[in-house]
Image (tube, rainbow, N blue to C red; front, top):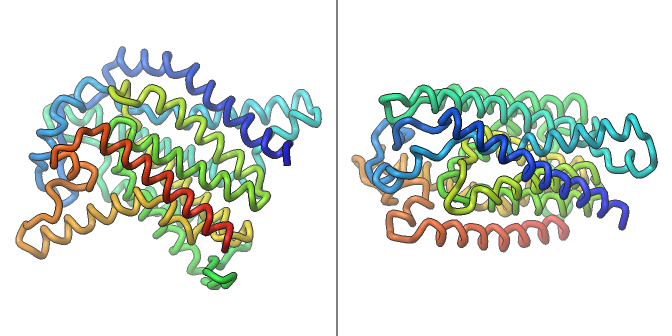
Length: 357
């Protein structure tokens, strides 16, 4: 057990320090080339302007770089490849133990993290250079959803064809066999988690809640004896904490799409990895552990539905809901810290339910 704990926390610590080490160079690059939006504000999903949001954030988006999420995934991938490489050139018992890249557990989450980060980076670059004179640039929502759907289908197909997973766990040690429909279901879950990625709207908010999400799943995977998955999740937490070190108010950079797409899609994969594959209930507790993403996504859906069917009337002053609290007069740091607290509480609840089954 002690060896497993060292394997989990050793690489996580390394990931944190890698992130701290690379951030000054990344920050210099982001500021040197002014990689931020050239005009503040955004357009809502329904195509309408968002005057309340634009007023709240008129001085925040311009001058603060995007692409901060690269700190996270570069830290994770660098740590994973470094430990793998060391285990190959110095194959001792200790170095082999620390290598957490494995076909059965971490190939898919690592690939998902990288692909999500890459697609998100493309969107960020388009947002930066496509916003000259406009409120926003970037990939269209349709294209981003198509990218996430494709990732979900490919991951679902891997689970179904390569890992022979076609069922999900239910309460009281029951399972639901979905057959080939596990593939579209996988894509739908990934899409919903991705829709909550708009939580990246306040300094430190996304970093704090994602650190709790992956910490919770690191614990679940450790209990399931899926040590490589547990290590992977802990390494992600290390990268997030390095990012968060520089993202607390006032943020040096924003996580943006290269971070949120990578993390939401990877979180989905981890939830499925700790479900029937690990003999657990990772998917069942996903809406509990990731409750901030669920609430964020639902608040957008409720707002859009209300405006469409109630002649433009809104439920919230501005959506997603964390901006509603801002509009009510809450300081952004208060919103952020209360989200952190709720994340920890529901992370503990979800972890406990996963253990109880």
